[in-house]
Every structure is written in C-alpha cells, then in structure tokens.
Length: 256
Length: 256
DNA sequence: TTTATTTTATCGCAGAGCGATATGGAGTGC
DNA sequence: GCACTCCATATCGCTCTGCGATAAAATAAA
Image: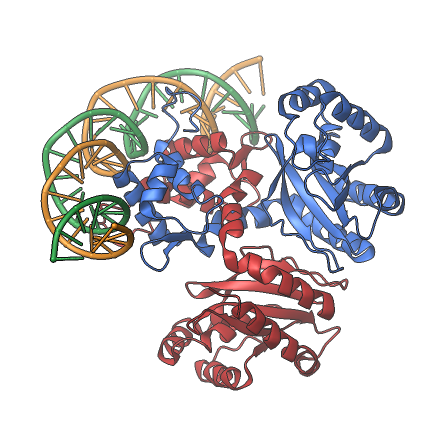
C-alpha cells in the first residue's frame, strides 16, 4: 500500500486499493479477474467489488469472454487536470510555434517525484515518430528535461536525487555515473540548456530548458527531440538551443 | 452519486466519493477545502480525508495558502490506459503519416456514452492551433467524428441517440434538428465519411471516418480538422476525404 | 464427460470511514 | 491591536461499508 503510516487515520484505504486495481493494467492489454486479484494483492472478493465499481464508472470494460480492459473513461481525471493546469494552456502557443519552426517534436513536462511527466506534446513534422503519450514518465537523471530541471533546484537536493537514482541504464548510452551526471548539471547551469544523446531510447537526441515561476524556481521544462537520422547533437544544439531558451523564457515570463 | 442502484452492495461508495473530489476541479484552476466540500456534496470531514489521501498519492498539491490544485500525478491512470489500448499504438503510424501529408490536425477518438473522446492527437503543422487535450469529450450528434461513428452502428440505436441528445448548440452553426442530423448520417453511410462545419467551435472544419473491428462494428474514428482560414469544407473534402477513408481502412485491417 | 479453475453471489462481521464538533489559524474591518 | 467571521484541522464515538470466506454457478481444459 501507498499509505506512509499505518496509523494515518486520515488516509482512505479504499481509494488506494481501488487504484491498485487500475495500476494492475500497467503493461497489460487485458486481465482476468483472477489476474487482477493476484497482481493487486487484493482478495478475490475485494477485486470483484472494485472491478464492478470501475465498470459502472466507465473506467473498465469487459472484453470478449471475461477479460477486462481499461476504457477511455479512464482518462477522466487526467483530462480535468490537463484543462486546469494554467501552465499547459499558457505554454501551448509557444510550443506550437517552436514545433512549427523546428519541425521536430516539442514537449512540455513537469516533475513528479524523481521523474518528468509529459503534459503536452507536439509531434515531429517529419516521418520519424515515437509513441510517448501524455503522462509518460522519464527519470530525471537519465533525461535532458530532467537534468534541465535538476540544474535549477538547490544543488544539494539535485545531488541527492542523482546519487539515489543514477545507475539504471535504459540504453547502452545512458549516463549512469553520478559524477558524470553532476558534471552535466554544471554544464547546464552555464549554458542554460541541457542535452542528451540516445540515453532513454536509441536514435533519440534531446535538448531541454527549464521554465521558471515568479520566484525563479523551475516549474517545468520544455524540450525539442530529433532523431539521429536527421541531426547530430552538435547541430541540434547549434541550430535550436537559442530558440529553445528563448521560448522557455517567454513561457516563464507569463507566470503569475 | 453515480451509483445506479442504492441497493448495489458490490459498488464501492468511497471510490465514487473520492472521484467527486477530483471532479470538483473541472473548470477550476484551484479550490479551497470548503469549495471542494460544497461542489462535491461531501461533509467537511469527508472532503478533508479524501483531499489528504489524494495529496499523499500525488494527485493533488497545495498551492500558495491553503488552496489545492490537481497535480501531474493525476495523469497516472489515463497514462496506463493510453499505453494499454492496442488501437492507439496501431493507429499512431497511420495518423502520423496522414498528419505529415495533410499538415492539418489528425486525431483518433473512441465512443464514451454519448460523446467521442480524443485518444491521440497530431496537431496542425500550420500556425493555427486549438487547445483540445487528450481526454476531451465532444458530443456525438454535434461532431463529424461522432456522426461517422453513429453512421456505422445500428440505425435504430443511432436514431435514439440523436433524438435524445440533439438540440444543444455549441455555435450558431451547430446542427440541432434531429431530422437534419439523421439526413447527414444517411449521407455519411453513402460517402463513407462525415463532415462538420464550425459546429463545435467557430473556424473549425472537420471530416471523419470510422475505424471498424473484425466484425465490422465501429471501434473508433479518425478525423482531420482544418481552419476556415485555409479551407472551405468542399476543398477539405475533395482533397483529403479519400486519404482519410484509406487510412481508416488501413487501421481497421489491423484489428484482431 | 469429467475435472479443474474461474467467476459470481451471498453473508455475518468488524473496523474504516463517517458526521459532528471543538480547537486552531487566517483574513477582515474598525 | 482587537474582535469577529470564516476556514482548516484534529479528534472521537458510532455505524454501516467493505471485508474475507465460502458455496454455487459457469467456463475452460483434459
């Protein structure tokens, strides 16, 4: 369970237990009731009750036979979030303009724990397309957007996060040495943007810059991503980093 | 409450009560605890417990003062859905290709109740951009995608939906007469695609075609949307409806 | 056809979530 | 600076919601 303290009487267990039913679908197209019970750790009766509840609410739908799938109704809360976060609506015109001029994928993300989460995504105008839907999480230490964010928070906190989370490799190119990552943060602080080359998936190059709030603290990041088939990291940086920084500043200046 | 039957002992009330806290944020950037209590219909104590629970889970975050906002963590379940629905991943390359050739906004949607919900969105390569995030719902009767879907289901069911939901106008151009909408469905059945002109918001033109499953029933729709500043409905149809239909069929042929 | 597994339906129980309320904190007006 | 109002937080005794267990029904596999 997510509950931090077994004595937290303010925490509603049923919410977490219910969400665990939906979380069970991560990496699965469909699941049987028995599989949901096993993956979520709930008894068969409890799993049955939550599944029934989410079917009524439109979050789950029965597939052929008795298997269940997540349904489009599961987008309900995420959709409310996407229309209530002012940063997204404020950033969109700027992201669209940068997407238009660069013709590459341009995204907005915010921090969630040790990850960056995509909130808005304008896909490449060229034929190379990679499926990274809204809500996708990328580890901060292994991504340009994450490192752009880390470069703008308290250095001690950034160092703690890097030491705690570095080490996991996603490709053969992922930086895993904390010292090397911290060097990249220092470089990012100097240049005002970060970059990564094929660290989260092969063939993908990225440059990113932080968006700040009125107090100068980072509230999110924007990035441009382009494939190795069209760019080298050097040419992507030379051509688009100035516009990226300019766009990040333009979005930052709208913060209230 | 959403509960259809007060005697439904399988329904977990706490889930619905909790979701009502999050639903309260629809149309609001932030809310106080008192406002959440009032909008959701929960007592102060219950609202307090659910707010605390969602703060721990990362779905809500405290703003300046005591106000609360939805946080990016609220995308959790929606994100799992977007990566588990095989239609989305199957459709993406085709949507990207159509977006690339048409340079206009290309989207995928599925039916939820009386609405169509955007599941994937490739934005226009031109400068006109409209904020319609993933999860946005559009009434079936008042949209090209919805009418493309209605044209492929049982005519009696389609007629019932049109009579029950038609009448609400979103712009001065929204079709509200059920007879006229049913005529458009007949036209759609003939042409294999539907269209709408400025019905959901002014300046927006749309053509749509249904994606079908192995049994020929519709499982979703794709649409191309372009602004009146660049197209007339006639030229959008003439130029892109053949490709749209072709793309819908290509996606349909991948269904299992 | 038989057996095994999964799903559904039901029930008595107990503790999770409840509403009420007291207390603390913040904002406003004088 | 103080009084008042409103909001937020903390707490408590209570009850009914969600529980696990289990029997029956349905489905899948041999």
